[in-house]
Length: 255
Image (cartoon, rainbow, N blue to C red; front, side):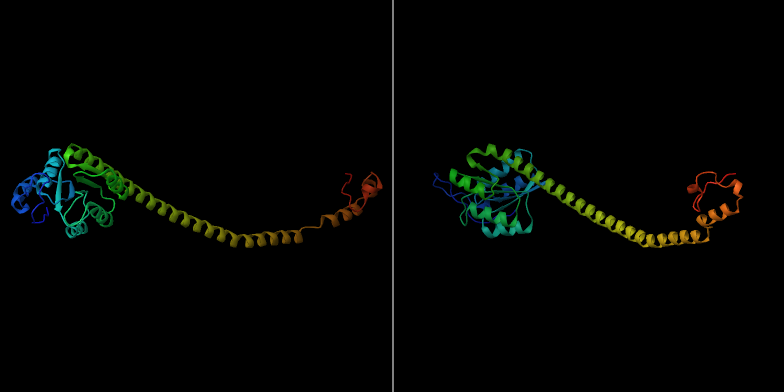
């Protein structure tokens, strides 16, 4: 966990300043030791040590397993998000050095897609609408921390679903690329086969045509042999039909 060793702001209405964070660190560290076997990593943007303890305690009581890094400055938030993208960002809106809107902008730039939930005091409706339009996932009032756990669980669940959808889309894209490459290869093979067949076809046609020509040249002339046969046949056995049917081209012969 990362904390700034500086005094916390006093709470409105009590007229007293909260004890310094460095004096209360052991209590918060004791809470975080209970989350040693963590499945999530949270970043908490909070300058008040008592509020940070209350938020962490609320999440631990729900059974969530997580580690948390607490920051309260722009530089610390940028350094934390640049190191590794967390599972969730929880942020107060009113901070001494910068506000929640700036924190949201930094998170959108350095950790896009990470759920961002405001956990703050009084927050006007117009501000809420503006923050949600800028990309905030949800907001929870510190006076109603019973909504914190459901909001966190819903944000984590939706984040997991988006991540799974992205993985599925990436897997589908790779499959499509592989299919397109295979289709291109098959098209290339088919064109190559057509080219080989086209090269063979002209030679085969020439060979068949030449064979037919040689066969016709060597075969007896039927049209020329028919008149000769007719002349060698005795007149008595020649065609008894009409003169037209006994011409040189006639093939009707009596036995």
